[in-house]
Every structure is written in C-alpha cells, then in structure tokens.
Length: 210
Ligand code: ADP
Ligand code: 5GP
Image 1 (cartoon, rainbow, N blue to C red):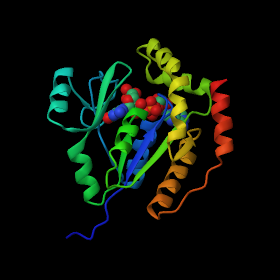
Image 2: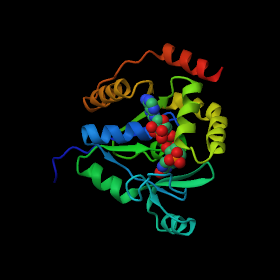
Image 3: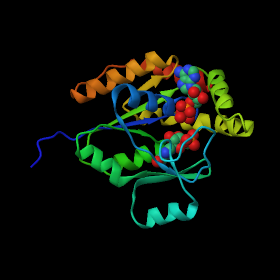
C-alpha cells in the first residue's frame, strides 16, 4: 500500500479572456503543478501547440473518445467541444501530483458531481473591468474581431457562476493574482480556509455587470 498523499484538483474557470489560461501556465511553470491538457474540436490559435495547449482533434475523433469513455467530463463551449482526459489526470493525482484544470463552469459542475476521492479546489477568475476584458480578447483573437464580440456577449451569463466556486480572484496584475492563488492553494493543502472579502467580490461583480 502506498503512503503517498493524493494530489489535489485545482480548477480555474472564468468568463473567456479573463486570463485563466495565462494564470494556469504561469502557475505550472513557477510551482511545477501539472496541467490537464484538454482535447478540443476548436481550431488552434496562432502560437498554440498541439499536445501543449490542447490536443486538437476532429469531431469524429472526439466522438470516438467519448464512446471509449476517455473523458472525465466534456462540454460544448462556444460551438466547440472540450474534454478532460481521465487517464492522465487520475495517474497524476494518484502519484501525489497536484493538477491544474482550465475548464468552464459546466465541466467544473460535472467533476464536482462525480464525488471523486480527490480534494477539489475551485477558483473563479474575474477581469478588472469590462474595458480591459475587451482589450484582452481583441488582442488575443486578432484574426477575428467577431470572436471577441461574441465572447463579450456571453460574459454576462458566464460571470454569474462565480457563486459556485470556493474562491474568486481578480486578475488585474499577473504577479499579484498568482501570489493570491498560490496562497489559496497553500491553505487548501493545509486544510485551512483562506478568508476572502465576499462583500468586495459581490461589489466587483455588480460593477462588471453594469
Ligand atoms: P482565458 O483563458 O481566460 O480565455 P487568456 O489567458 O487567454 O484568457 O488571456 C486573454 C488575453 O489576456 C491573453 O492575450 C493574455 O496574454 C492576456 N492577459 C491575461 N492576463 C493578463 C494580465 N493580468 N494583464 C495583462 N494581460 C493579460
Ligand atoms: P478557449 O477556446 O478560449 O481555449 O476555451 C474556451 C472555454 O473552454 C474556456 O472557458 C475553457 O476553460 C473551456 N475549456 C477548456 N478545456 C475544457 C475542458 O476540457 N472541459 C470543459 N468543460 N471546458 C474546457
């Protein structure tokens, strides 16, 4: 019997463009967390690398993976499919490695409902303002301004899911935000509660929706 402690599942979700992918990559680089690389039917963005950012697959292959029960969860987001690979994630967690997930609220809900034996920490990332969010989306999706506009339209709905997460962080400055997430993870690993000002968060959400 192994005495090794299981790793924890650290889930980051946010409205598109708030910065969860950037944060996930920085956290993994700085603190050696393992990233769950999802499969997607979406086309790669410039600079995205197959097997590093996503496993980019055709719809037919994605369906085959569903049929073979390869996904811990999968969901349709912005007209594309995204899925979390079961084997890799379980292998890492059982080996005591903490795993970072950059997935949406649907995937988070599905994973929580599975009542797995692993500890789960859920963090919702918010942008500092709508203007900043639009600029980030426009810079990222330069090839197609319509994508940024479509994702802004979805923002008001996506943001409402913040309440179902353990913690909420505002991604204003990357360094500050990374330090806060690191602290939250540290507290979780010690089974302690990290205190957050819920009133301040509610006020910020209200401001983002106005
Ligand atoms: P998401 O994964 O939530 O959709 P990304 O991580 O792709 O968002 O970030 C969207 C864009 O915003 C990217 O171009 C990224 O470089 C930029 N970005 C993310 N966080 C910050 C930040 N704190 N300050 C400035 N730019 C940021
Ligand atoms: P993007 O196309 O911007 O990379 O991602 C779009 C959305 O899909 C983001 O909210 C991202 O977190 C989510 N996503 C990425 N991978 C997965 C996954 O495996 N499962 C689920 N449910 N959502 C995912």
